[in-house]
Image (cartoon, rainbow, N blue to C red; front, top):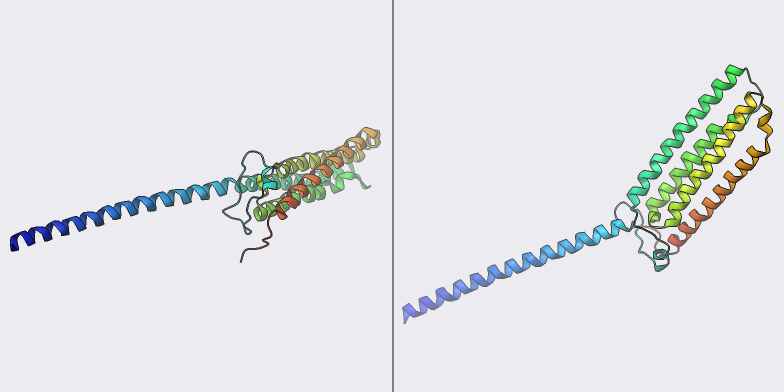
Length: 219
């Protein structure tokens, strides 16, 4: 009888150890799957521009979903805006140097559009790329195609406007009659209309995101 009792006790102990090991393996598998699902959700939020790096966390509203195209991350758009801001800064500095050198070489002392090329490049270019960068970081605007179209439309409009200022200002310094051409004025007006369209796109994207959720700031 004692022998049978010892054998039974050993079998029960072995069964308990086996059950514990099986439970540990099951728990590890469940934990691994949960971690996998969590990582997948985080990646999906990052692709939607809703997670990682934002100061304000907002849910995607159906009104926003209808306006979005292919997924663009906040980080990708921030990198693009930073590069555009750097490019406009370089163009603004070159414009200021060109104005100084051209007027000095021609002995020009009058007023010319060339004098405001560098300030327009820095304001319409550099500053107006840095402002959307901050708004994109705050509200995740990269997911909205209207925001992306607005950025590129603004870039084209600023290029037309500043380019025409450069051409007209250079002609004024060179004392050319073409400086008063109506064609230059017409192209400059086209640049201003392009900037207006960009403003509309940017504000539509911003208003949609601001109205999407009631949260205003992270604690």
